[in-house]
Length: 471
Image (spheres, rainbow, N blue to C red):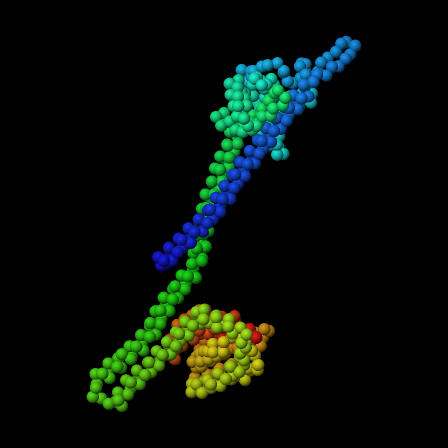
């Protein structure tokens, strides 16, 4: 492959990977942010539920209930022994432990008679977040705690309570203590709930790591897919480049032979200045013949350039409403080729031409199409030979068939019949053809949104079939 195509393939692969990488990075970043926001929201819900539970428990135990009986009275709630909140001042037990940062699920109390606060708050349908709640008075003295397995050391509790109350905000994060908090003042006391922030960031880091691994694997997959797609996308460009180089080489070869003859004949004439024109007529005649061949080749090359450019498509676009009587056009050109066929001992039969078949297209190009097919049939029909033309309607198409006798085309050559400068073998190219006619014919048919094909079976005949949409 040419270096230019290799560079183009690398650039296309890099561009595809870059665009997909940006999109993938945006999606994964959005996923990580969504995970963070979701878990942070669950933490806030857990803290809020813990605060509300603490306030509810504190309120339900603030007013004692006196039950009278014949044996005396009993005080329940308030400062009684059955209350879950101790109103006397106390500090956290020195035997308590630090909060668990990795435990997201825990068993809750099954005792229906206990009024203690469950510190493992259930949020989002089964996600348990451990919460430590505490109640302090105006002097930041603990007057109540949640009774559960989640607890704090005296030093950590003192620092956390002081930092939360002095922050001046109802909720936030204590970065130096790795805690989230939420507080609420009710009456003369403050209810504060704490939870470990390490679980959030551990989850976030795990999500980022997983996303990075998935992103790398996805990018590697995209790279190989982009490389494959770049090869497939550039394959037509590579084929077109190869065909273009072959076209230039073939055109140069076709022009080289007549130029060589012309130069040689001219040199001979110059070397014999004393000879008369009549004496050197054979050299001059050879020069004239080769010049006409060059003229014909150049005209074919110009026609090839026109039919392969956008000019042909634009001409058909402008002629979208122009209707051409294909029946008259085929009959007229068949009559004009009768003399050529007669000289080559070829019999022409064009009786099966259905009248008044109209198609849309450019008359000059359609006439060139018909002449190319008839001329090709005359060249290869053999001597003696036979040519049969027919034009009929089939559904929404006008079908033109040109059948000629003579030597058939090899099956391996059939796919290349419409290639530029293609000639099947030496025997079929002795008539001085350049191999451009059928390629021009295919371009004209393609511009008219039709189809052209060839069949050639050994022992039978060669048939070219053209289908063009009826107007």
